Structure formats: C-alpha cells, structure tokens
Amino acid sequence: METPLKSLSHVPWRELQDSTGSAAEIPELLSAITSQDADTAIAALARLRDRICQYGFVVDQATAATVPFLWELAQDSEVACRVQILQLLKNIADARQWESTAVAYPKLLNRPENYVGWEREARQAVRAHRGDIGGLLAESDGEVVQATKELAAALTD
Image (cartoon, rainbow, N blue to C red; front, side, top):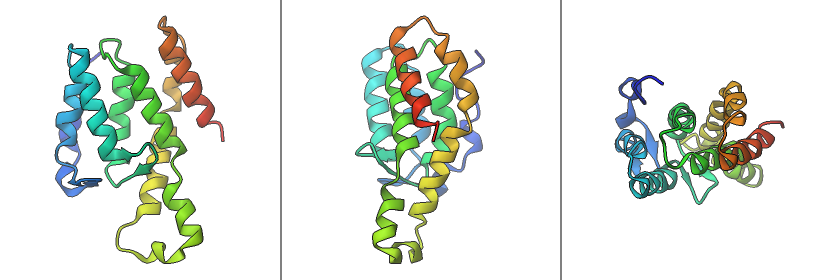
C-alpha cells in the first residue's frame, strides 16, 4: 500500500465543522490511527468517532470528507483497529438522525447549517467506496470479514 493518508492536505479541514467546531484536528486523529501502538490507534479512533459520528448516529459537515480516509485505513492490514473503522463506516451509512428529525420539524431545513445535507453526503461517501468491500471480504481476519459483511448489508438499501 502507498503511504497512508497522503491526500489529507487536499481537504480544507479548517473550513469544515465537526461536533466540536473546527475539524482542523481530524488529520492528526487519522494519522494517529495508523500508530503501531493499538491503544493509541483505538483512542484516536474513539476521539474521531466523537467528532464525526457522535453517539454513533449524529454526523457533521466533516464526516463525508473523512470517509475516504476511513476506507483507506480499513484496507491497511497494518492498522490495529480495522474492525472498529468498519463499524464506524456502518454507523455513518445508517445515519438518519437529521433526516428523521426534519420530517417532524421541517424548520430544521431552513437553518444555515445543512445537517440533513451533511448526513446524506456522508452516507453517499460511504456508498461510493462499495467497490472496496470485495477485497475486505477476502481478508484472512475473520473479525474484519464479519464487520465487512455487516457494512455491506447496510449498503444494500
């Protein structure tokens, strides 16, 4: 695999919003996920999850921009938390919090923050990489294969 995350600098992270405000810290968290130390990688992923898919179902503006890097990391056998990354991708693919809320409260659609649009973009970003599923299903790690099957099932709708 090529140098992981080499395109991080192509994303205007400071201009994007995550659950804490500026998404400027996301590249650092993504890089930390590549750590050889499993505890460091898992802790970085947990912090990233809180920023882009809070509570496991609330996405933000920076989520869609983060998704391609998560797919890249999920395919890197050197990454210690691949199963958790695949689970996060599934959570993002399943996210419909803002869309569901907007049905009951249509005024949400008139806010300057485009929560419903961000959620749709994030789901589309996950779906855009469906072609990567075949390689993950061929992995020898049974946990990665199981997490991939669960993600694939979420992408069939």
